[in-house]
Amino acid sequence: MKAFRLADLEAERAANDGAYLQFLRERNMSVGLYALDRGSLDPQQPHGQDEVYFVVSGRALITVGDETEPVARGSVVYVPAGVPHRFHHISEDLRVMVVFSPPES
Image (cartoon, rainbow, N blue to C red; front, top):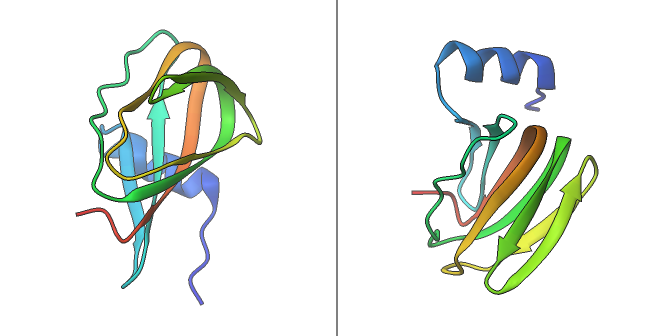
């Protein structure tokens, strides 16, 4: 079994000075923690994998293709491979669990 604590993942991500920490990689998927602070810009480009975002904390808007939705703790968003997307108008520090399938390359 592989088990993780969010506080430990957040500490590791912060210690590595990055917005993203991949903490699990398997044959068919990878999982990471993505952090964007209030007022920051999301530099993402479309990915070659399907993604699922689970918002752990914070508030923002997300645009996927030409659709925009508010997100907050508990929100789940699916993004198909190759579709432009980004978080914006981040009003509270955002922490998002990201699942890629197949694994992010």
